Image (cartoon, rainbow, N blue to C red; front, side):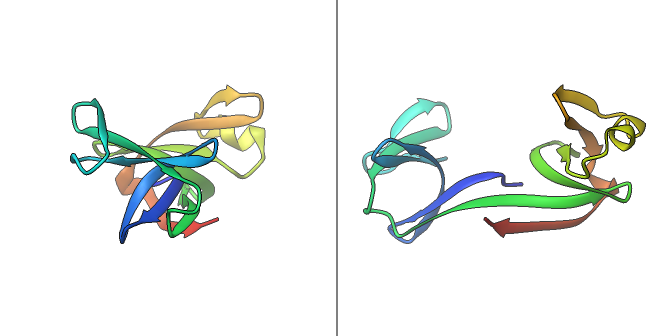
Length: 120
């Protein structure tokens, strides 16, 4: 599940984070100019204009008939954030208030429907 920036650089798509005048791109294997930041995670800073495309990718879904964005995946569970804007419904779903008016929880992946990734 993706929720974040992606960059196309040298024909490959990478998870990314804007970084001043460039962008940090992340890989799971070593490559030219990449530095290992932890086992299985490599980063390289690419200057602005040297990458082909940058977009923000968001995964949306419905769970128990309500709209959510998917923030993460762990085993057979999805970390979801309610986007319906109705606190009583969020509480009824058993979601925790992560921040004021922001409700999140873990949903069994098999209960989630209408998964859709789109660029913003």
